[in-house]
Image (cartoon, rainbow, N blue to C red; front, side):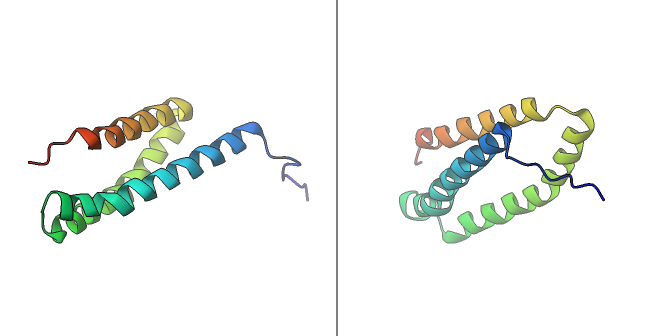
Length: 102
C-alpha cells in the first residue's frame, strides 16, 4: 500500500487556513454578536426578524453550498470563484455601516 500523505504542508494550505480563520472570526464577531443586537435594539425590530433571517440564511447555505461546490469542481475554477465570493463578503460586510436605521 502506498502512503499518499504529504510530508509537509504547502503554502496554499497555510494561506487557506489563515483566510478561513480570519473570516470565521470576522463572521462570528460581526454577524453572530453584533448584528442581532443592532437589528433588535438599534433598529427596534422584534427578535423574530433576526431569527427568521438566520433560518432563511442557514437553509439557503444548506441547499446552495453543495450545489455551488459541485459546479466549481466540474468547471475547475476554484480560485476565481473564491475571489468572487470573498469580494461579495467584503462588500456586504462593509455595507452594513451604510444601512439607514429607518
